[in-house]
Image (cartoon, rainbow, N blue to C red; front, top):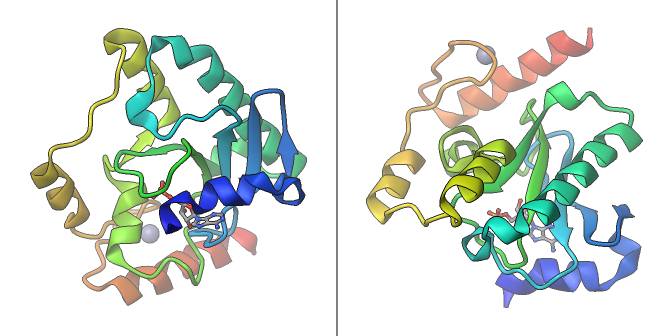
Length: 181
Ligand code: AMP
Ligand code: ZN
């Protein structure tokens, strides 16, 4: 079952980039940006929907691993988005640590973009606050999810509104090029 592939991945310690007593960092196999890592707990937590206030210390440890991987790679924390998908597709809870360039061949659809650049992406701090206040994180109603997936494209670095996805891809590549020159 492809839903369980992350669990298979962490079963092999060769895939661990860094780890702690409670968590593991692996590379995302289909990176949606220049740098894309996943932080997973060692304990068997399937998804964000299982989390309660009791998991806050664990979440804080996972967040620490997120900052560690950025530091170990010599990258800038401010260049990253760190959070969870509101509607994850794969098991074992995983925290995305992704650079905000979004320049990658694996970023193929508007859906990919909107999963990281609308409320379908739940920043770490938002989840943390929600658990603290409400003791759980609820699934989005399907109609909300569908409308977020259909959100018109908007660049994350300027106010450009590309009409078509390939235009966004080209535009993001230009942002990255400007940054590196
Ligand atoms: P989500 O939508 O939050 O469940 O994201 C699952 C993430 O896992 C995606 O970013 C995929 O690119 C990534 N992924 C899928 N299969 C693997 C794998 N075998 N190893 C590492 N990452 C994977
Ligand atoms: Zn732009």
